[in-house]
Image (cartoon, rainbow, N blue to C red; front, side, top):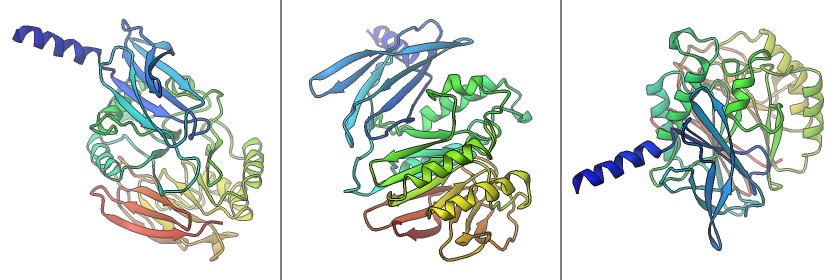
Length: 377
């Protein structure tokens, strides 16, 4: 009898997927994309979703990446603010996710963080802090797996991505099986104009365009931008940004998220990319009264003064973050625009309600580093 239970347990362990991650590209109140990895011999793209009438089976698709299958299925026409249970392939575990609310009747919490999986130890500890805050979703601001141009790991880019996504499943899913969806944008160690196929094979981008606006009902717009890692900052992307912001002036909460920083805490303020962002994007942020921009890449903690026309101005835009989820923190430099700074790992917790947005920077041990509130514009 003991042998029977051992075999059952062994087979269940074998059947479990090596990675599972959920993302949004379209409306987060009514859609979800589910992706998971299995060994190449486990060709089962079935997802069972629990709906009002019981469990229904749906068939996804897959692609081969060496000896790994990447399975993908996208759901539409879901009900806002609803928890759905699901199973994937032959994995026996029941997971769940929750669609975003269509209205802001109750507070909405989300985490913003970048420069994620450099140190396994730091990634795991910060991930614990993220789970403790129970966000509805996560925005990942680039340099996720450090798969490109990072010598210490001495593994192929695919193996580095697979390692990151395996760790994500192990440390970023609640013990009860609840999976937190993410919104994704890459950084310089994730994608380049000449090395992008692997990224788009692993993540669900219906079109090979990274910059986009994600609208949560009529209360929140997240403007996700590409700081030149796949498409140029200037030109078409800037024209798109102008239109995206101009059509969302009635949305009370509007934030931008991108990888490299216009107002860096560690890197050179006069660098090429920071200068391009300040030249092409910051005037649009100011013109359309953006509340704040979340920046990364510097491996540090920062918050700027409100800035307008490259000067301190109470009516300006605040730049927050600087990206240090799981990277080694770097020294910051005293700059005229930095109100808060530090050599600290951090993620940013945003909580919205009908009257204000509270933005907190949290360290590795879930201690607050900083807090600022914004009134809806």
